[in-house]
Image (cartoon, rainbow, N blue to C red; front, side):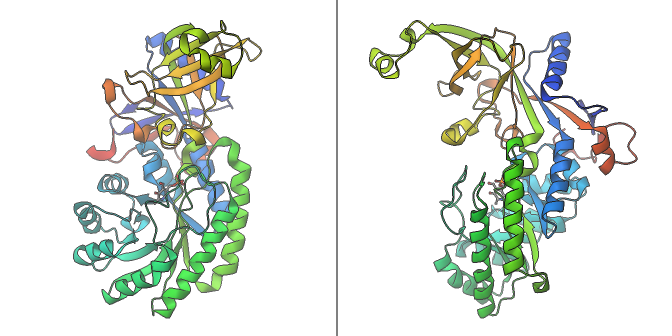
Length: 442
Ligand SMILES: Cc1ncc(COP(=O)(O)O)c(C=O)c1O
C-alpha cells in the first residue's frame, strides 16, 4: 500500500501467491528500505469474496458490517462499494461511514447505550435505526429523537459456547421484554424490530437457531401489545477465520432453515445481521520483526517445584523472542480471551523439519503482561528475522494504543485482479479513491 492523500494503492495480483510468498516479498522490500516496522498485508479480495459468499448463502439476510471490528478506511470503502450496510457504535464510526458517501439509511446505530451528544449527531445526520435494551435508553431516545426506529436487543437464548460472551453486558432478558415494550408504547416510540447477538466467535448453529426461535416469540409478544414488528436483526458472532469456512456454511444452513420456519417470505419481515469478524478475520496477515532475544534454561526461569511438576530436561534452552507488536497493539485479544485464542505463529526463515525449541514471544513494551505466546515450540530464529500470523483482520488494529510510544502496523493492500474487477470493472489500476474528508483516517 501507500496511503497517499485520499488515494489508497492496492497491489493487484495477476497470479496466485501464497501468504508466505506475499510476506517474503514485503520483508525483502522492507530490508531494501532499511525498515523493520511490523506490517499487515490486507487482502481486500478476501473481503469481497466473503461479502459475496454471505449474500449468496444467506440471500434473505442483509449484512450491516460491524465497523468496530476493523475500521480501516480502505476496508470500509470496499465493503460499501460491495453494497454492504453498516453497524456503527459511536459518532466517529457514523462519521467515517457517512464520509464514504453511504446513505444514513444504510446505518444501524447498534450500541444499546449511546452517549447523548453522539446520538444527537447521528440523528441530525439522518441515522434513524438504533437498538435499545433498557428503559433509560428509551427515555433518552424519547427526549432526543422521538421519531427513531427502534430495535429491541434481547438476551440470546440458551448457553452456547462462543469466544466473547456479551450476555453480562447487553440484552433484555425474556422476562422483562413485555414491560419494556409496553414502556416504549406508552412513550409513543416506534419499535420496528428485535435483535440478538449470540456472542463473538460462535461456531454452533444451534445458538442462532435458538435465538431466531426466541425472536419469533418476541414478535408475537409485540403483536399482542399492538406493536407491529417488521425487522429482525440476527446480530454478529459468525466465525471468519480461514479454517472456519465449512463451519460458516453449516451455520448459514441452520439459519436459513430456521428463518424459513419462523419468518416466512410472506411475513414481509426485513432480516439484517451485524457480522464483524466474519467479513475481515481471514483478510489480514501480520508480520512482526524479532527485535530481541534471550536464551534461558528452564532452571533460570522456573523454581524447582515447577520443574519437577513439568518434568523434562532442565538444561533445554528456552528462547524468549521480543517482537515489535504486542498485547497493546494487534494482540489485545491475548489479554481479553487468553483461553480462547489459537494464534498460529509462522516463521519465514526456517523449514518445518528443523529442531524446535521451547519458546515464548513477547511484545515490545516494558509491561510484564505484554506476552503474545507464553509457550510454543519454534525452530531457532535470530534478531532481525520475522514471524507472521494469519487471521489478524478482526479486533486487531482497532485496539492499537500508543502505550510506550508504539505504533500501528504499516498497512499494505492487495487483491486478486479478477476479484477487483468484479467490483471495479472500469478500474485500470488498483487505486482506491477515498472521498475528500479529513476524518477518514488518512
Ligand atoms: C452490537 C454488535 N454487533 C455486532 C458485533 C460484531 O460481532 P462479530 O465480530 O462477532 O461478528 C458486535 C461485537 O461485539 C456487537 O457488539
